[in-house]
Length: 406
Image (cartoon, rainbow, N blue to C red; front, side, top):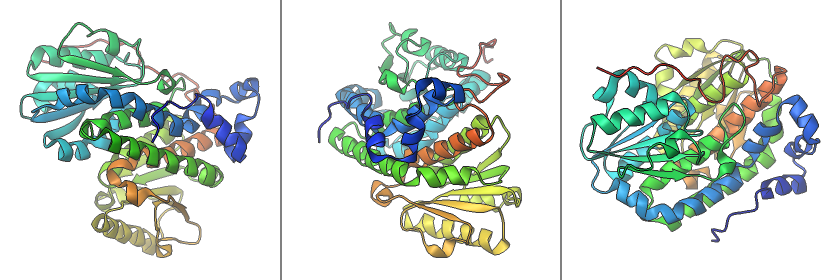
């Protein structure tokens, strides 16, 4: 398999040749796309298959550096803020198994408020800082604090912005390794889309650095599936986003719970809070959160490829059916049993998910969440590139005072 980076606009040519519904939006002249406010966001969503291949090619030469970072570590901390934290959630359990090190995901804010108290035990350790811009206050503050407080912890920075403070401020420290992704992943939209999935893929390489060829095959397979999702499910996701729901609950197990967290956040951000969202595990939903599923609620269910997990997931979805909960369900997976579907429900079949496995599926589930959020944003007559009309949230969190943990 070739590792040569694909031309920047190959993804666009593929869409135009296939004449998908996405192509109709992208064929609008740039002025019209900017007027409707989706110029950046739709491109950043649709470019993901291409950028995943580029990230695979970019990470392969970093195999030795990644192995050096993880050599003999006893603990692994994945940190970021907002979506970047959820990116860590998507790989934490898988990396714990592959690296045989206690792994934890912790928001940068939690490090600022509680210092070392929440860090996983065991030294030497590795802290992986994930960031799109690398300019949020938590990113630099958390890394600066841990460098001083925990000398036995090494650091790996994975960022989409080579000019960001996280990438540049620690260049003279031998304990910090910085890897930047292609600038195309440094999303210009308010919301993270291609930056999120590429950070997940970059972090995923930590567990596969000794098998770079296998890693590239995973990225290639995921990119192929993503292209089919965009070609085959684009229109149905647009139609689903127009349904009269005012709430959304997203369900996921294991690594797919990270995808559920990010999907819920995407809908919340892109509708400026007009659609309230909740994410839960399948088993956790029964313990109170099921009361959230009102008649105006969309249920998005990411199915596992593991037979035991699927059995639990099927039971829960059938319980939702028996109780008549929600407006409709969108079930995402491969070989979705028709018995899980009510008349109004939607099955999004994604051939190849089972072969890819749960440890590599979150980026595909998140892609579906991104498209749902994008189309709902348009329905709400908001602009996907900047849906927060009053500036409540911004692309990079504004500066605030950092207080040193006691």
